[in-house]
Image (cartoon, rainbow, N blue to C red):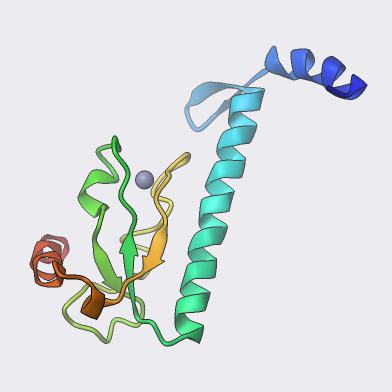
Length: 129
Ligand SMILES: [Zn+2]
């Protein structure tokens, strides 16, 4: 551990701040911000790569356990363009990844032809329309 870390870590670990309706240890808040911004950047990068390679469908990752906000969205497939009417459009207004601070979910390219359960996913998404 460097000298400045020996000095800073105890100093920062004792500090708190009020954000998002709760009291955060400064270190925990910094981790949450970094984790959430990383997820936002990963989402933007996935969308850009999919568009560049002509992939229109994306799927939300799965994590267990998850929260009540994310549970209904896990494994769901979306159309980036909105042209594939079998799936809802990923517009960033109704559904946005990350869903909340500290959310672990990411968007992944989805190739329907490689998914043996594609028909089931297609039917389960109807509840979001
Ligand atoms: Zn999540």
